[in-house]
Image (cartoon, rainbow, N blue to C red; front, side, top):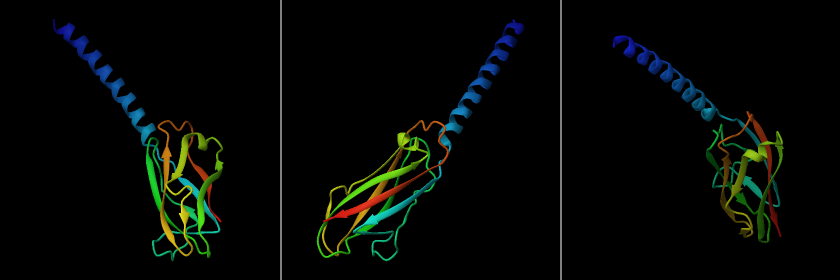
Length: 148
């Protein structure tokens, strides 16, 4: 009877070891962070990091991101012109090109009309897919335009 329990104990320990290994590998692949390098360009408007619109914003800076996460960087857009403009944002220059398959950058100010000499907060939200393949680092360019 003790030999039967001995074999079961060995099998249970082996299965526990396999389970711990698989769980550790899964946790490591999910907790991997991806550094981001991104630039912010503007046309007919200005981007700032502060609500007083005194510190220019030229970089997308959400820090390291994890697969399956969503992170936000709030910037402030100011219309320095003398007539209202309509805001649009586009991303380009994803590097590597496959990054755009795993990452989505959005905001809540698309087609927003911004009056002359006015500013508005603009949260930029980066959504990362749960499975990012072999992606380890990425960059992109963001262009925010104010169209008259």
